[in-house]
Image (tube, rainbow, N blue to C red):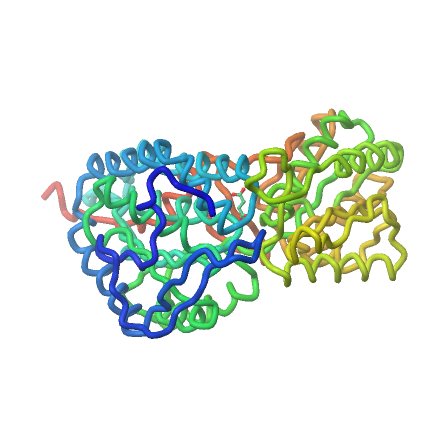
Length: 490
Ligand code: SIN
């Protein structure tokens, strides 16, 4: 069992109204270490009326918090950044423990997570309105950006700290109060944020974390969607669940931001710097072992460099050291659960049956644990295979050959998803052409990992809408109010 410098960061209760909440629920759920299968902790599965209470607390706190000064909110966000930085070792340990990702990657995630509080501590002071020239000289039009209201933040398993922070930091900076529901598999990083938020100075009721088991999550989600008090939902997760939440939110016409599934293509042109393309593709494909929404899912490589790319890429994959994320030597660890492993196996088997070939065989690693899978690299992949159509969300790299620029473009855009796309080329015209024509919310040129608090992160098509991070991410938590002064010259 890992040890913490500050054991108080590991919590076993929901965080509501700046207190550790005494649930009356007799139902509990357990959080397991995905690497060892061992139980970490048992948590209360909040009762429906307790979710209602948390919504009420969030809504009541908004009435005061909305009028707090931007400078106070900025200070609390900055304190949060400082506290996360001071506690980085413990926060990374908790993250690796519940999610499995290697400790170095977890440490990177905590830095990334904290950077949202740092960035919005600054940007929150710059919520500007405008004065607008009216068609009628006698009127004046002034706009204010006001906080949208109490918000529900529904978070996924793959970034247990950063996804909550990416949603909460802009919301808190502009004066929204927040109700965060972490994924039942990884709630501990969010509870640790609750502990730090109180220390950072956020008033009671402003940052709340509720707890629901996998079984109770749909009912908890429904309550948040249908509550007239919650004015916006930000959700990161699958497109299928996004569609359900959208329907459920329609009765209250909530503002929504959805960051949903992806199926990111990487396109490597003949003129690319191949070593760079290989290194960056490895980072993109295998970050969190393929479990990020922006991980490359399909690698399109132009014919003249195809063989060289596959050889160099495969050699790097074979050099991975797979094991428990707490082992310092380990480069890549486990998937979140056995269903994630099964999906990789399904995509590999489908591709092989349809004619793909192994460049690196990979496969399950039962000696390490049931959630371990050594990465597979496939060549001779075609557009009709599952791996080309669906997001694998795991360590399978599918390499597809193409001849002409527009062929790659057509392949890449042949998807209902449009989150991230990557292009490797030394030709600026190709970079610009692809940047404009790829149907994705984010196009990265010559780089495999690009996320940043300053970046507008989000998708198009069935990858969702709304942006997180950057000034646009803050806009998503505000509404524009117009004030019209009439008859000013009378
Ligand atoms: C995600 O997978 O949703 C987030 C990835 C990132 O922020 O880089």
